[in-house]
Each structure stands twice: as C-alpha cells, then as structure tokens.
Amino acid sequence: MCFAFKKILNWYSERNVFVLVTVNLIVLTGLNFLIAQLVSGQSLENKTVELLKKESVFYAFFMIVIFGPLIETLIFQTAVIRTILFFFEKYRRLAVFVSASLFSIIHIYSAVYVIFGFFAGLIFACTYLISLKRRQNPLLVVWGLHALCNFIPFMLDFCK
Image (cartoon, rainbow, N blue to C red):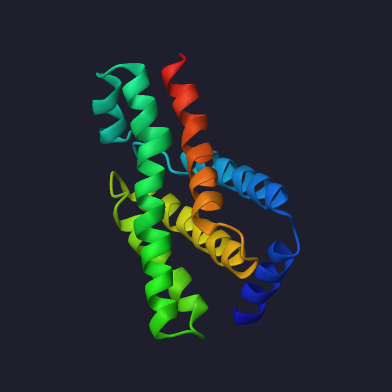
C-alpha cells in the first residue's frame, strides 16, 4: 500500500499542473458516474443543491461552484494539511487521510456521497501536497479543481 501510494504521488508530481488537474477531473467525474451506476436505490440527490435550486441560478452557481469549493479547500485541505504537517512534518499520508476523512464527513447527504467524498478528498489532498511541494499555490490549484468538479454536475443539473 505504501509503495503504491508513493508511485502514484511520484507519477502525479512529474506532471504539469494542467495535466494534474485534467487527469484528476476525469477521474473524479468518472468515479462519480461509476458510483451512481453501481449503487442502485441510493439517492445521489444533494439536499443543499436542492435548496439552492429554489434560489436564482446565479446565486446557486456562486455558492456551488465558487464559494463552497473555496471554503471547503480552505478548511479541509489548507487548514488540515498544514496543521498536521506543522506538527508532524513526515506524516504526509496521515495528512491526506485525515483531510479526506473530514472532507467526506461533511458530504453526508447519503452513503454514496460519503464514499465519493472520501475519494474526492484523497485526490484533493494529494493535489494539495503536490502543489505545495512544487511551490505552486496549492489553494488555487485545489480550489480550481474542486470548482470544476462542481461545475460539471451544476451544468448537467441546472441546464436540463
């Protein structure tokens, strides 16, 4: 497990930020659709999104695609990962696991969302660490990736 984790991080570390975000976006979108197909009877409905649908499209777009991902990235990647690395510099896997776990817990709309949230959290946390290692702006990279991940279902849902 440890070896596989290092191999994946090394492969991602060697890619430029555009490739990194594109691959992650494809993986997350595919994972979302795969989980939706495999888990029958489970609702993929997000109660927060349902409430925002009653507001204007612009307000919903701002909250789902811009503001939500920014706040979640600040809390669940930036704060969690930097805090763990500040106290335990060598425990990067712990930082990734805690970040992904906390990220999944806030997406508790259904069991499907928790599972997807954990895998998305893993990808966001790994992307954050890679961007941090490269001395790029990890907040901006992960926020952009998260915003794109929310943008796709937003467009599919709101443009019916």
